[in-house]
Length: 129
Image 1 (cartoon, rainbow, N blue to C red):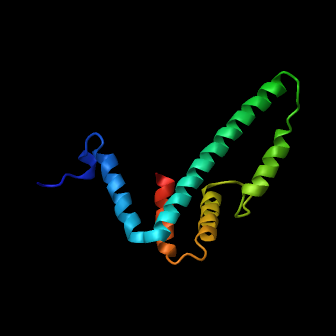
Image 2 (tube, rainbow, N blue to C red):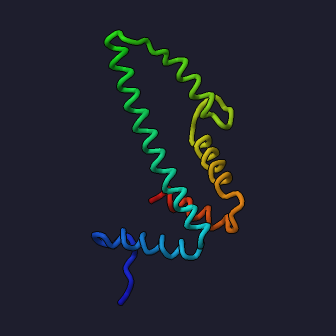
Image 3 (tube, helix red, strand yellow):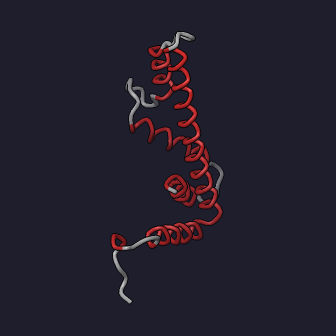
């Protein structure tokens, strides 16, 4: 049977294809690839929790500020966040900062592993899952 292009896969065919590709790559990468996948997957889920918690905290602070219970100094918060998140020092937070931070995390996590390339590939697959 002739294979069809990925764009024409129907239903769960695309999901099955991606799952089989992940499994194929993870077995190629071995332990380092699996550890990378697990780290990327965990980091993605942790980031979602942080974003959710930050959103909830923002809503609570806004409600309390609108009712006069607290005064929020958003300028100070903005300055402090930019100071910590601006990794390239250009005065604004952008994609370059996110890429730099992700690279730092990946480099830190793959130290001492026998297959750094396997870890990096698994890490990226884990982030995308």
